[in-house]
Length: 323
Image 1 (cartoon, rainbow, N blue to C red):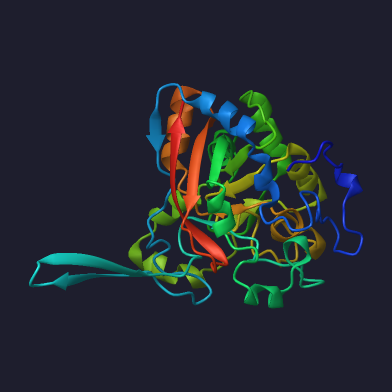
Image 2 (image 1 turned 90 degrees about the horizontal axis):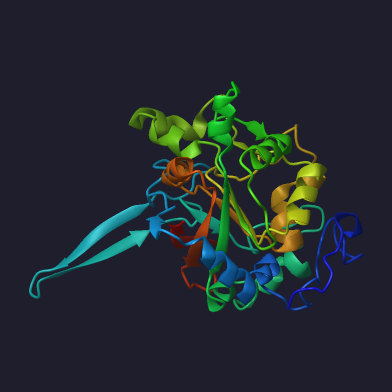
């Protein structure tokens, strides 16, 4: 169910008993899809018109990237199990779902002030695995619709701006609005936004020694979307069904840095407030090259996560069909 009239940004919060900016109840009191409700049959059917030449581009970064994860997270492990008598082989993999390309699910992040997740859920609610699991996304067919790429890294370099994807820095909303204007990109309700900052390209260019020292690099932090009220207003008024980046945090990181107002964290407002999936560490290099070559920055996107009820975050299988 989608609302007949979209609430204004200034009308938030919808639940006066909840934290600032929340849109709890917009799609019903028991909703578990959030902004993915905007992927209606009409929206998906219209997105399919983006397919003209049938080119396909994968957006998955390898599962073993980053090769040395941050925050002491588990490294990716893969082993081949060989059965001699048959003979046959099985694969076993073990990984933290914060590794590589991922969508952040609604259990991942709460409002710090109230410790509440999307639609007012609290940590104890997750003892019931049927609450806010990403399997609900898969039951509805996954994240399928019209993708839009804003290639900020290419635009910034072309315009003489310094791009340091491995350090803390902000991608201003004004830059993205300029890109939309210059490249005549149309934003439609239900679109899936991608912002390229150049992270995966920069990381892949590091030597193995620098990749190993990456978690402890100085200066640290992450280049990402600038978090402020204007940014939040734009995300809300654009009515994206999901947003993603090649950045490991989508927004500038760390999100608790002195440059960020703790009340306007994109993770809090998007995941806990609106039910807006955040995608991180998407490999956007081939997509950006193809988009530049064709002069087209919109495409048909399919992304169907692994169907596991208890994931707080999710890893995905993903492909894009372009123009």
